[in-house]
Image (cartoon, rainbow, N blue to C red; front, side, top):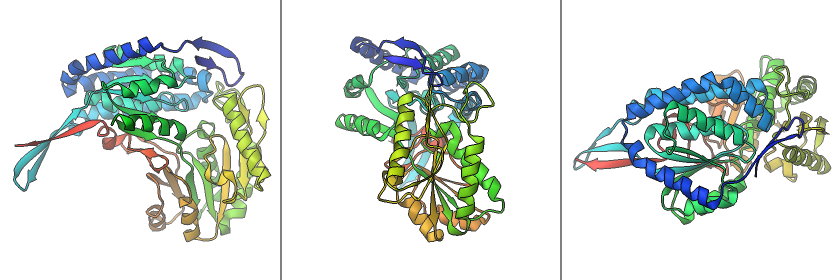
Amino acid sequence: MYTVTNPATGELVEEIENATDEEVRAAIDRVHSAYPAWRGRSVAERAKIVSRAAELFAERSGELAEIMTLEMGKRINEGRGEVGIVVDIFNYYADNAATLLADEPMRVSTGDAVIVKQPIGALLGVMPWNFPCYQVARFVAPNLVLGNTILLKHASICPRSAQAIADVLHEAGVPADVYVNTFASSRQIPAVLADPRIMGVSLTGSEPAGISVATEAGKHLKKTVLELGGSDPLIVLDSDDLDETVKQTATARMRNCGQSCNAPKRMIVLSELYDDYVDKLSKHVADHFQPGDPADPATRLPPLASAAAADEVAGQVRKAVEQGATLRTGGNRIEPGAYLEATVLTDVTREMDAYYEEIFGPVVVVFRAENEEHAVELANDSPFGLGASVWGTDPARLRRVAERIEAGMVYFNRAGGSSADLPFGGIKRSGIGRELGPAGIEEFMNKKAIRL
């Protein structure tokens, strides 16, 4: 079942039956059959439709934010902000379509050639619940401009978001069979990937989900893009205003109730600042992140997406403390609803589960680094490699440290950022491929070489 459960109250709002196998096969028929005509449209035509979608997303930002607040507990202001990023993404690919898809002439050893950029066919998107609109936009906008068609399976707790997105795209002019939303179950995904008419898959989600989808896609030689988990390091080298650094880093961690793949989850602070940073951070987190109604703009700490998610994160905190970590503040479940107190942990060592695992909730883990070398060592001692950030006052030092961090993205004096024109993605167990920017439109592109 696809279910809408208000995580602030635990109230079951709606249930929707999963699609039948016959309905899923019919959906594949639709996106496959629609591909030739959609591909045949000019780039300008497709870009115009994508531009119109951006306008409609902007007009309906309030409605979409309210849906996200109900389905997964997102703070209403963060929901509006998420739709703002969606608008930027659709505008970026609409405005830059001609440039991104222009032929590339080449002079080769035997004469002249040209690289022609073409779509590849019908694609499957498997999307997560933590950013119900933004994650879809990263996959959908570039591929609609390119000329691919899309079968979209959203998270089982976000059916209203899924339907609202489809409604916006269809009203903008995307043909009904070019973008098809399906309430398929996870058990039906292997059959979709086995179908020769599906040419590729993009998944954003957990490591287990990524492994499952990549395994099935690999069996059938399907192109795959995976954006998986992260345990991003945030290195504080120095600060000319520690109170402000604490405020900004805490806010970055608590954004979306800590449920962001590229949130800074491991704060690595040089020894000379460590004690003051931990004291100030613990007080700031306890004072400023109190649970409340996510529909209230004044709320700073919303519920997690589900009671199960809150229980899991609380269990991770409890286990860390049992294994020897120090609980500086928070850590308790709050009911009714899916709330967890904002939490700060220190003294986490390699022998503890919390050292290597991703904690997907409002939990900050702080490490002491003896020097710059040690900070980089701690940052890279992780199975993940999505993003990272380096904080300090010396640009040359920031750049030196950034180049040594094993991650797909590094930011200076900010964390967890994203912009439509900047490639997004990671290495190691954080995923395969890139989204957004010029790289985002190339993942499911046939770069056809024509020897003239």
